[in-house]
Length: 142
Length: 219
Image (cartoon, rainbow over all chains, first blue to last red; front, side):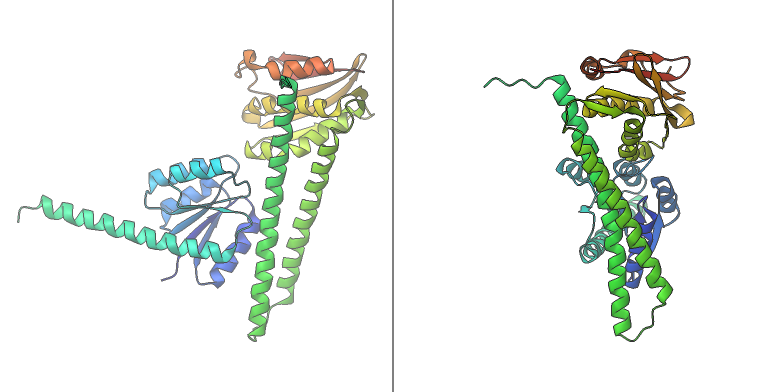
């Protein structure tokens, strides 16, 4: 099954080229150049992973990460940044990021993390479905 | 040894670090684009070795994108280099309008992040004073940082340099939300310390939506 990915970065040339390379590797890729545009896409579609730039105008990556996780807790978010500091990395992981990758990213590494994200999301969705079924079964008086 | 770091040194170091890291971040962004475009070229190369035909125009587009980012990186490196050299001479003759434009350039990322547009207006004739280039850049940045937060819905900060009898002044204009920002918060002790070093003065005109930085002809 191909991985469905949302790429979010305010550098249009970056997202367009990376998207083309990922698509050539069999992934289904959507792009957004702002956190607001990304939030709209997350509302409309389901993604296995969101690759999110940490530093963006208007709403930065950490703010966006918080909103994404609130909306869809199962979403697997990989933060991408040109300004990697340990402090930011720790903060991102505490807020629920799956991983943290420094720019320029190695596509092989990023692809592995996306596959990991997809597996993680499937597990979470499976667990949630199981809980739902159990709750329905418990609620019924057979 | 008893070495006490005073507020001017501390503020200066923070400014140096902030500007450097912001501009290095920009370089990383440019490198990331170069990296992806080079990667795509590699992908195309692999495709051609498998017998697929790649449109030469596509290759040209990739080459242009790489060249654009190389020019961008070169400009950032030149700016960082110039900024680093601003500590070479403690006091020298400085073109104020040009310095204001330079600080606006190296602060561009901070403005973009806040959705603010900086509009430096160069004076028709050069306005020159004898001052400390680095501390002048630092004080202009601190005023600009405050001004960007006070830009309000207009999201624009004008930077106007003018010659005065006593030296020069820089006006930070179009600060629509200056009245909403707490006047007591500006200038802080950091700006006050730099004002002393540069023999400058600061006026906050809430009604006109302006901050005026007056600079002495010589320090």
